[in-house]
Image (cartoon, rainbow, N blue to C red; front, side, top):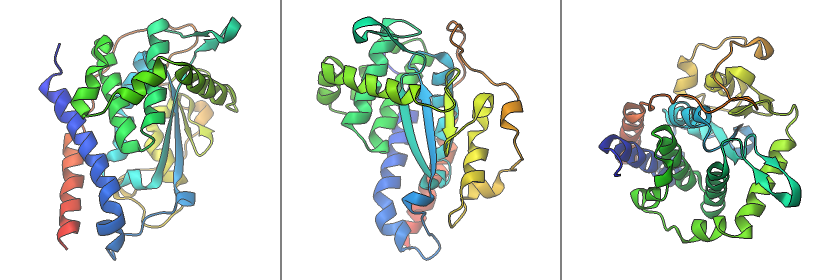
Length: 271
């Protein structure tokens, strides 16, 4: 079954946005007197601990995480993904995943994608594509994401079918298990080392509040920041260790944000 036109358009926009963001920064943006980019030490770390077939993880990636691509938020964020979630290690290093063996496979595929394409502009669109299929209950078609994004499948396919893929997953498992405090459910979102608990859908506010560098992004300036009591946050949607897969959420609407950003980049390039 083919992707819908809307899906293809969204994936194309994400890929194009990330390509422009990475390729234009060193020349056009850094040369502009009106723009001062933060150093790596000034960026806010954003960690997402998730599992591939969890509907809430897919919902967060597709409908919430993409918001860092609005305006210039991506310039202040160091995003890292950890595809493991609530998986467990049994005897002989056997991995058991909450939503079954196919989740283990896709967790490994996404881990291999991050390894094959360390740049965010390559691995994030691929993972986004898979999670969009999860939302549509078409995740068995995940391999179509290679063609849709123009990616060479060789490294990822060799990785997830070999011990290399298993080693990557065990590494993500160790990093997830080392979390302090331990994660309770997925998605588990961490900003600068601070878990957001059930308030993870408000992660943008935490990012803006944590950022101490120059040139505060427009999105942060427009965001109404509040003093959050994380432990007493309003419950959101999550999957605990005993929950079963439930309903799916709607697609993200990021087309206008990306179009606006690309328009701004074109204006900078023409200066």
